Amino acid sequence: MVLSKTASESDISVHSTFASRYVRTSLPRFKMAENSIPKEAAYQIINDELMLDGNPRLNLASFVTTWMEPECDKLMMDAINKNYVDMDEYPNRCVNMIAHLFNAPLGESEAAVGVGTVGSSEAIMLAGLAFKRKWQNKRKAQGLPFDKPNIVTGANVQVCWEKFANYFEVELKEVKLREGYYVMDPVKAVELVDENTICVAAILGSTLNGEFEDVKLLNDLLIERNKQTGWDTPIHVDAASGGFIAPFIYPELEWDFRLPLVKSINVSGHKYGLVYAGIGWVIWRTKQDLPDELIFHINYLGADQPTFTLNFSKGSSQIIAQYYQLIRLGFEGYQNVMENCRQNAVVLKQGLEKTGRFNIVSKDIGVPLVAFSLNDNSRYNEFEVSDMLRRFGWIVPAYTMPADAQHVTVLRVVIREDFSRTLAERLVFDICKVLHELDALSSKISAKREENGKNGTVVKKTALQTQREITDVWKKFVLARKTQVIC
Ligand SMILES: Cc1ncc(COP(=O)(O)O)c(C=O)c1O
Image 1 (cartoon, helix red, strand yellow):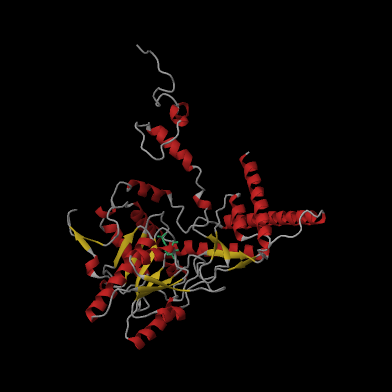
Image 2 (cartoon, helix red, strand yellow; image 1 turned 90 degrees about the vertical axis):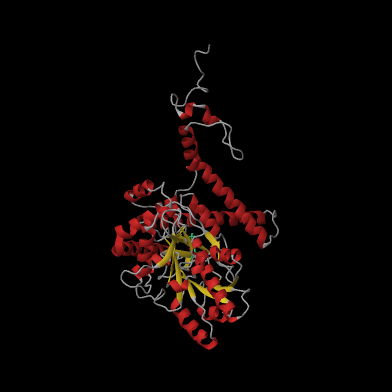
């Protein structure tokens, strides 16, 4: 008879997780394990691995919300076991409020036409599909070919537009950018429009530099063009970020349903809608702009329910959270948050300008972000600045611009609600430290090269060799620093 068990075999409820065998076996990565493990061990192991992810609050690359009030966190947890499809009221209320914010032509208590999505990407797929179907129906009715639809955008569009074009077989006609001009030029966009264009997509808040495209000018030019040609090419506004900014701090700016050719608008609830990741919205101007044949009706959940989404079931916490923010903050609250973000963006921009080392490529009016490039990148580049900032915990992306401005590299800091002035000032301070270290490092490299030259060791190097040498030394330097931090 066995009287006692060894610690490794005994129950985890008696021993701490770290005294159990579960912390010394590796986790399955490809095949599900044969046996169960205790919940405490599963929690601890996963939780510990998640510690390796960066701190979301310091991730300045993302537009997505990283902070919400504890009351809302609680509501979201309470709704975690509710399915979106079982929910009638809250999505509709949000759609109505957002449609009013975008100046949809609605009566006081008229229901708006729109739907909650996973994010702007799904919203854009749905809006794009509606345009494609409307265009095809019209062409069919006219007895014209309908097999070559295209869509006109700037080359600065987010990848979801390329996905839409690819998945739904629509040609993407992109207006190229140029140095110093990083958004779609409305004049060039209208030149690209032809009889097969299902819509022109304008962005309110370019992902690359936050700039608002000139939707009003696009609308006016397109009206003229439509008059001349007899086409009725419409506009979609991708207001993923700007949709929850412009109504509050740039109310005079005409970009929404006030413009007659704007037929649909998407916005990410999880960006400046101030909700955690997983919510977007698409609103149509009127019922006529969303072909009825795309809407499915189901009744097996108890009542007739129209549905137009790519997925059927999904979590409802984000919807609840969006509703919470809309009623909790109201117009006043959103306005204050956006104004704070704008002012903190100004603090950061001015701090960077003061260094005299950067060229700012974002605009004062737009999404509150600062996009900037080095004035002089002959000794080190923006990618190196980005990498060095990681040492301080900051995630600041560096990327190249799309065609025809690929040679321009920028760093971008998105100012979210939870990025206060103190953090903005601290970031400027850390950027200055990084520049200082990179300056010192590049002087060291030049001195070493000179010395080698004197000794006759190095005769001549190509620009590529020099660049590689700088990068190698720099990488070693960063690695050494990282090790020191760990120690
Ligand atoms: C202009 C624009 N459109 C669409 C998207 C895609 O949005 P989501 O992440 O909500 O799917 C983004 C994301 O950054 C964006 O900036």
